[in-house]
Image 1 (cartoon, one colour):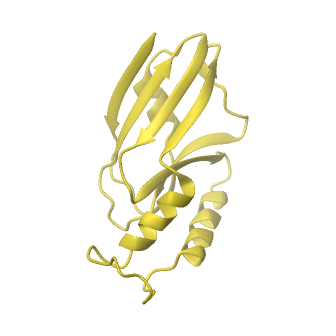
Image 2 (cartoon, rainbow, N blue to C red; image 1 turned 90 degrees about the vertical axis):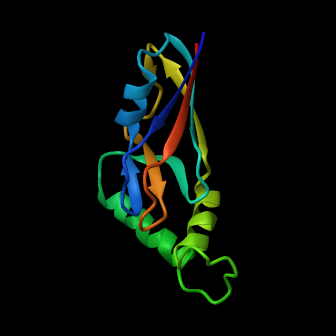
Image 3 (cartoon, helix red, strand yellow; image 1 turned 45 degrees about the vertical axis):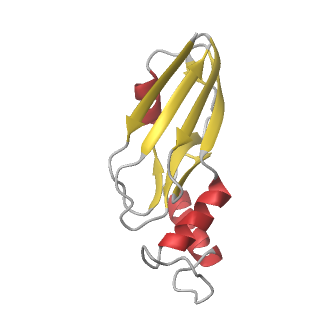
Length: 136
């Protein structure tokens, strides 16, 4: 069995946002065993799995990513969409656009403190399109 659904997330402000529930709701009933792949269709946002309990982790991610890849560097040539454009592309390359997660007993096989993050790297990224594919 393979099920594939495309979802459109609501617009999020720049930062790291837990979207685990949005993904599982979109996937529907999961199989007893299998895999789920989550793919974002954008080059200025990414996905990652990390701490899902303490919101200060998300703040620290934002601080660290902004220090690693700052805006307003004169080195950037691609700046036609604003000062956050090229940094967003670089940051999304660091996180990646796809996650594959095991499914067991009809649930995502995430660790106790793990959640799926939308990593929004634009100030006004808008609604983001995601494809969710379930094998089982």
